[in-house]
Image 1 (cartoon, rainbow, N blue to C red):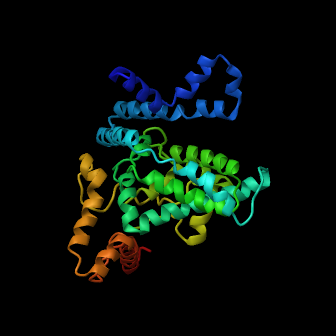
Image 2: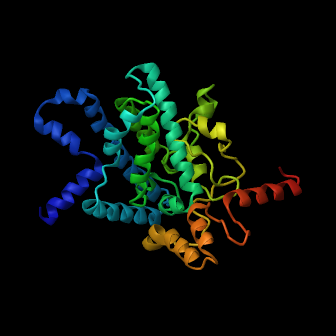
Image 3: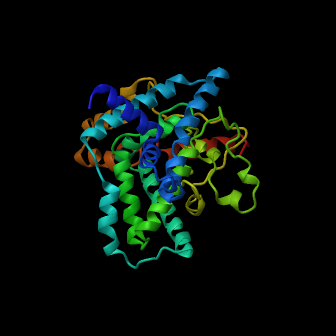
Length: 338
């Protein structure tokens, strides 16, 4: 394959049109009525919306080109790595874990409800650990470095993050008896919504989209606004809204935080960094962890640096999100603003 063919192939992959072209080439247009055919139509929407989002930003003189540039470089870098390292983690899980399930569901609507609740729990768990275990935070932080929210943030991921999540989610779901086909259906729905909630203010100013006004649904459906809160570094907003579509687990575990009209979201991470530098965005947290481990006063402290939350210190002078948030709330209380 020459360089032109490679570029064309990568462009088709990015725009998600390979499946559509294969159906057209087959001449069997009835395939568009199948689940795979519908999916082939839906996923190309996001690259298209991403381009529109960027153009609208240019028109409104709010392009945030640095964010798009770095996220595009991350996408290319991950694609290069994927050519040498392909981890079929989800396929391995689907083939391995069902036989160890405590019981087995069937492909029915009522078990679908069960499957979705379990899937959301698996996503919540994987996401929560990514913020609370520093080694996992190092591979998740790349996704939080952009200082603006837009659809390109979907491509801002460390290459090991997907294998980790794609192992833990099916591990939990399949052991809980979720039928493999049910798992894939929920995986698709959750993934589709997970992309959408990264849409930026250039296209949707009020990320609540009126969802909060809908009885019951507004309480449990996670909106783009809720996910913007998750990407904030404001003390009140840090480490909240881990869910993807349904925020039932955030509400249950006390990590749900709606947006506050008087608190403007500050995107990014708390570490001082150069968000326009690819290496700092991609490897910065790993380098910071390596320095802490190397300079740790003891072997125990070095090991704890790996598993304790970001901001933990062997001296006891912790700056974890929990400590920072507590100090912030106490400050408000002293000022009589809480």
